Image (spheres, rainbow, N blue to C red):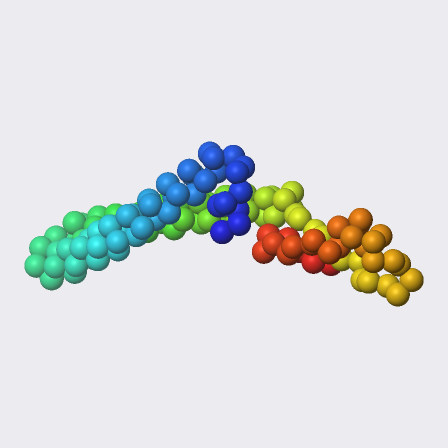
Length: 124
């Protein structure tokens, strides 16, 4: 979610959103189409020509191969973008513990009194 809130390149966010919409739209269509092709292949094996059944099975295999290839390529692309973003957008805050020999006015000068932790930051 932090990546989506980041004011970085909008192209990557649009691509992710488009791929998510396509995935949610294409998955049920591919499933129903594959099921219908296989049902048609079974019916053709029982009642008519084997050639049409083999064609429907080949169509089902091609459909699912293309669907799986697109899904894996898309997933790999977005994982690569996320890992690149994680590598280049790190926010680290170094907390210096209060010591007895440092006066409190020096600590406030360092800004330790007004330090607010943000959920986007890593504390070391």
